[in-house]
Image (tube, rainbow, N blue to C red; front, side):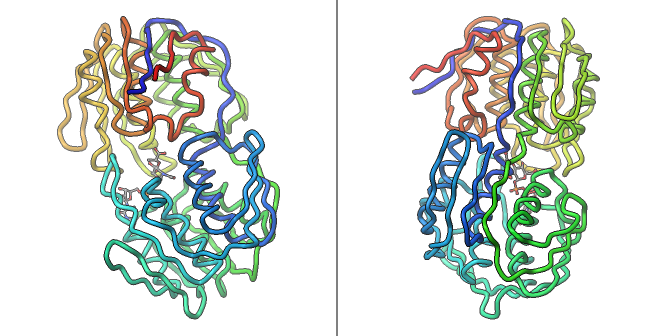
Length: 418
Ligand code: EPZ
């Protein structure tokens, strides 16, 4: 079974250029289905989730070429509007193709994405919003049969929760709809604005994306464009955490530093010294971290749920007690039992996890249960004494490009063994 073998207690130093954002690349790849012209997409990360999204594009009839981190996509020949169960289950966030397919073809047939390791992942907010845009949706035998017989009709919609995916599906569907759509209580994550910027580069008319209220004026068609995806804020913060737990020092390059504003207070509370300009950050860790205190996950611009697990790995080796409250997903503590096998002192009661920092972590065989939980195990292994084996790398490879090569270049003793 493939594993990462990590010998901990090596101080990390050096610089890392942050990869493109997975959670921007995926909805933008879906959006290319709507473009009747060539799209050149730069800064696409090499991830299994991106490969899964490209497989769906090819299945739909798009032509794709890849040149390093650039995807050249031509969707002029989109002829299919159904996505097979196999393709949907390769990556549950393929639900974002729904809005794009409806916009381009007026139809969409795909299987309901189902849950995943971190929760049930319902799509009720997506479906309710699309129905309010005039989409007819039949849910049968685990499949969604969607049609927009009179096209997508603009409307004013309010989301009960600022769901990232539901916001993206509304933006995609309404972009080629008739009239104006106003989306209230929209998600504000940076990836939302990046998707709007991409669509507007192709001729869409989307206003104030990234704020709680988005206005979309439907247009007739979208042309191609050349676009650069933003870099990944969660990956940037993950490398910062690797420096933090090894008393290291690191330059994190080529990402919008403002996108990690919600997590910077955690690092400074832990005693890290941070200097930054708009797109680069320098972090210097203390010999021993202090506890981050209380960490409550919230929709952006609150503390991101995707960084809860990596931050917990930091708290495990910090002085003092930290309290985590996971308010977004109902089962996002799969990393806790694995961290405890490495000597961490954590107790979980429902959505709350109390972490008592320990003087040291020790090596163990640990198993990633989900993407960010896997990142937490890597962070913990860098701080642990001895040789830790980390299994279930498929989770980690969904979101982190060349993780072992990058960490080795920063001074970690890490290798992948098949
Ligand atoms: C996106 O997932 C991200 N994935 C997730 O990142 C991220 O954790 C999440 O947003 C929150 O920031 C991608 O962008 C591909 P949501 P998404 O809809 O869109 C509930 C990672 O590690 N909900 O904002 O699925 C839902 O159950 C991944 O990169 C409904 O109840 O997140 C959850 O509790 C993991 N009904 C909450 O809202 C719905 O119809 C947030 O979900 C939709 C969501």
